[in-house]
Image 1 (cartoon, rainbow, N blue to C red):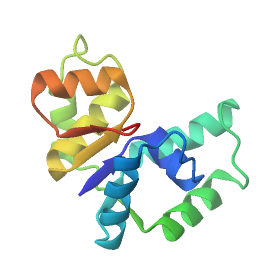
Image 2: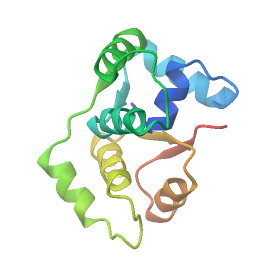
Image 3: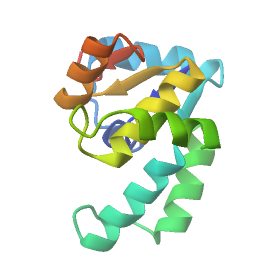
Length: 139
């Protein structure tokens, strides 16, 4: 199973193959055929917030864009359970300052999913912590 970081989901929806590495595209293709791609509810929040702030431009209202992107890409929304929220809260702020990143990491760990990201902080954190499995989306 794969859990996509917000930017990776945006890149994949927009078909931005110059940002997504060849190996990552292969991972996504295999996971899509197995219906094993997930995004967190945190990602839905981030996409909407980024659009509202003008940092990204969606071609449709956020709720419609998200609904269509989920349907078209074979992506499912992962559960954000109390256990995930608690586990995220246990990650020290000194290790990961962004609480949304902590929720994403805890979600990937709970799902036993490989987390696709190009965020160096998240790649370094997971490398040091030994979990969750991470993959640099640019490779």
